Image (cartoon, rainbow, N blue to C red; front, side):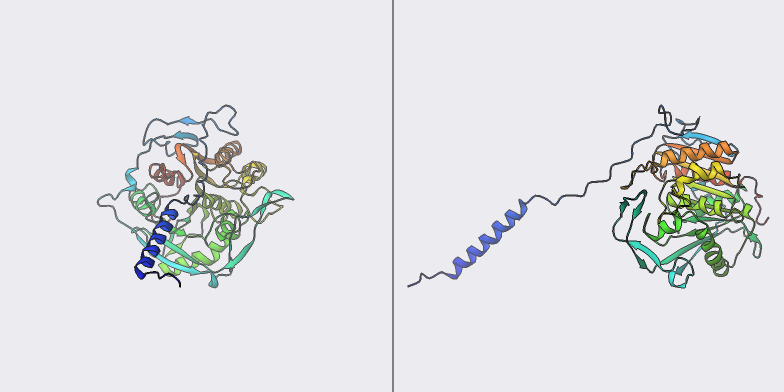
Length: 390
């Protein structure tokens, strides 16, 4: 005869089993956390043998101090920063308006469809300067933010600046619209329109943003000229100047390399360039034998070996800027070395440029930007009339 098991016993046994299982689960080792990417090392401006480092005029140790707005050359700032007064609302200053619209990739002639990748890619064993990346097509929408100053005269052809990685007009580290309100009211820059354009998404090799920003060609400038600017004029009831002296482009990281690429390949469209932590490194994809080093080729070959172009260039980099952030080890992925080399070749060729080396600052120089951006914009527009229409 089988022994009888009471229902109460079964309840207790079940409860004990659940309790011990839960206790055992609590004792399991936690899931392994993905290790953080190593922080880039600090690159001292005066390190012995620092590759390509220019001789800096030292303004460091004086928070809030920027180079003179009419000065050219290389300057050291930081390590502490003070937000410029122009980043704040000033009583009595007229405020411009910001409008937004979107562009669907399906309605575009260029960059349709977009591209994206699922994994980063591997170094090409036959060419260490490039990656093998698998991509797939995507559809995307691009946001355009347009700042129109209150001083704009309807029907006049206004100067303008194209900013990459938009919309960004009200980001704390940018405050572009507010800064322009103040600078325009003080007649330190012309009454310009600002057009902030988002990328097609992602970053670097195999993504749409990388294809647009890092490709060494005039294609992205042509896309903006033929497909974006006409919609800005139509949707915002403005007219944009055709004079390259009245056209500027700016960006951060790959947006900075895109800014220079636009002006370099189309100097008949843009003469003024502003970059923060410009990605003047080898990040072009796919590989192009005509420009095998990507944007590293700017300071390695293109600028030294080309006639001087009518460009005015402002640059900044952080002493903890990016350094080999991916699997490529081609000695062409140091943002500090790249920007130092850019300043050196620009000076050697006689370009109008100003370069800031920001102490205690990383990629994008976010902590320094509120101090230096207003001065950078004023420097960039030197020589252009500060009036509503030229």
